[in-house]
Amino acid sequence: MFSNYLQNDPLLPNDAQLDLKRIPHHIAIIMDGNGRWAQKRHLPRTAGHKAALTTVKEITKAASDLGVKVLTLYTFSTENWKRPKSEVSFLMSLIATSFKTFMPELIANNVRVFVIGELTGLPPKTLATVQKAIKDTANNTGMILNFAINYGGRDELIKAAKDLATLAVNQQIKPEQIDEQLFAEHLMTAQLGQFTDPDLLIRTSGEERISNFLLWQVAYSEFVFSKVLWPDYSPAELKANIIEYQSRNRRFGGLKKE
Image (tube, rainbow, N blue to C red; front, side, top):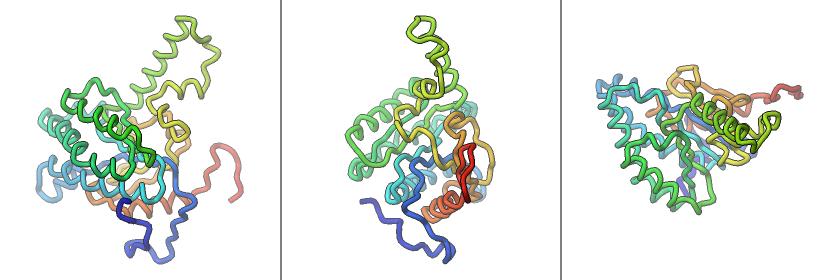
């Protein structure tokens, strides 16, 4: 087993109670604040990205121990290509390296790797490493660690619309057959089965926007915005965010007694 994070944490208020029977099945995280973390320490932005790897490992361990079914991490967006070439090159190399170093732990602890995004747009070395991680963990049955790499929510919706339009033009479906379920089946998250939609979306660093992330899937997700920069984000902060989630009254557009 991964290290156990279920014990009482001194960083949480004494009256904060985590209900292990109401852990969100799917948690999605926008990992933000790497650059600012580095700048505060007078370090290059790349140092922040490198430090973020430790946080990814720790949060993956914590989520798995808590019983989360799917953990989706916004790793690299379609907009991130606009960053300086040197930073993009570093990030692509870092993604490849992190998969290699993290894989033994994932395999040993029954975590399965999924990836969403336009993978064909990745550099060959990065793509090969990602594909190997997917293949090597394919038989694992524990938590799904779902990386969003070269992913954009609008691109995903356009791709789904094109797929359905092609099916309609080829008379494989009728336009009137297109409903929420059929549309969702053509999204990149369809492979997650019953856990396609995040119950909880967390964004670190204090920013309060979703930045083109899972636009369809977060329609009824609970949002929690943490002020902690991602490299400083901890299992204790994750637990506190889940406690905040558990305090919400989720009605999904209907009525529910408080």
